[in-house]
Length: 502
Ligand code: AMP
Image 1 (spheres, helix red, strand yellow):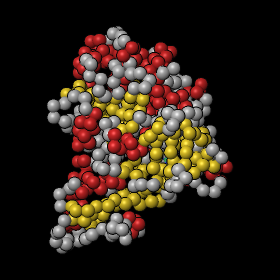
Image 2 (cartoon, helix red, strand yellow; image 1 turned 135 degrees about the horizontal axis):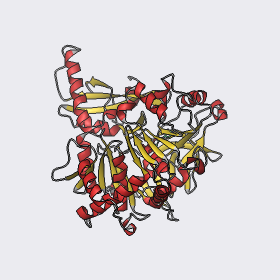
Image 3 (cartoon, helix red, strand yellow; image 1 turned 180 degrees about the vertical axis):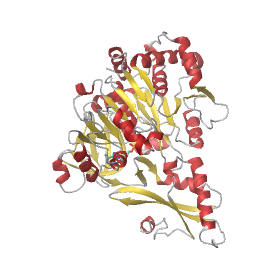
Image 4 (cartoon, protein in one colour; image 1 turned 30 degrees about the horizontal axis):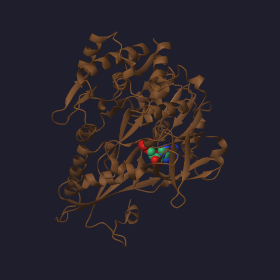
């Protein structure tokens, strides 16, 4: 069955069950299905034949899911943008996506000139006036059509939009339902949503839940920032399946009450997005002896994840890092003989970056038998069908689970007036990035006379400027001024030397 039909079937079976709980807000399956139909009727009235994708801006309001479904039911892909994106990026993305309208569940600080905004209040009014109207299913996105576009950091300072088709998403959920237990056990279960809806990790919880008739239990960013509130929310959620980055679990582990007593119905932790360390896995096993721990791996470009394995005690005791899993059905992993690069071949690979053929041809291709492949930039190796991760071939890093191209930050620092060169370098601990340092060369200037005041003011100015163009997690924690950046023999920035300084 196709993804929207699966949600339809779940909605028909579980009409009164909450599809989403976010703070005080709840939305039942019946409401989700009916309200998204009504909104798609309205979108059709407003947009007519304009089937361009639509940006959906907001955070974790249940209305976000109504918008997502309304878009795809009306034959349009959606592009989720979280409120953590600064206005400049929101405008960039909205311009690239190219529809003259954005759906705004929260109020954006800025939108491109001339762009229309459909606000939550107006959507609610439009929906209420059309409740009960059915939208023709012949207009739904087709399996090969793009279902969503998720933007990720791009090395040239502009984010790139990964297009995922409805059939890729269908195949992904067919597999994700088998993770950490049988698909049957997931029926009506509660799934934790930690990641913002604009990150592809959230696709794992949103669509595994919606196709299982489950309840998506969202933890909003304000709650995530306050450990007391966070533990209270986690404790009150009756969560069965935990989907997050390992970093988020690490943060929770710093609270002593985070254990089986707090989340007694927990069946499994499903991790993705960054390295799962043995330390994290071991601590979770100790605190949640009944829950399974599953490590999955994959980039946004191949629909969330393509390999996965349950972590066992034997794996913890074995030499080396934890494995990242076996390939799912429909996916084949190849390792480039020369570079060790992981190449993903299979049925959930994206058709490429939206309106960016140059970047698409660099990373994507088609095998002779027609299957799509994606060059991940990750290094790895296989042992008895099991994949192991071995770092990156380029300057992409993961910081607290966020995917960041160091080049993206560097371009944005260089764009600040008075700066001539910049290099951003990660500080590693236990194989994971702890924080970033920006090494910055200013145009010819007097050296700082007093070491504190002026320097601090300059740091503050750079960070302030960066926050206008980058999400907060991309702004380097430390800024260090240099007269010039160290160079290698062949004239490139000597990153090794800089790494030794952080
Ligand atoms: P994203 O597109 O944000 O999901 O990021 C994808 C990248 O995250 C991959 O290319 C890897 O570099 C990294 N990654 C994802 N899952 C894992 C994992 N289980 N272990 C190590 N790195 C991972």
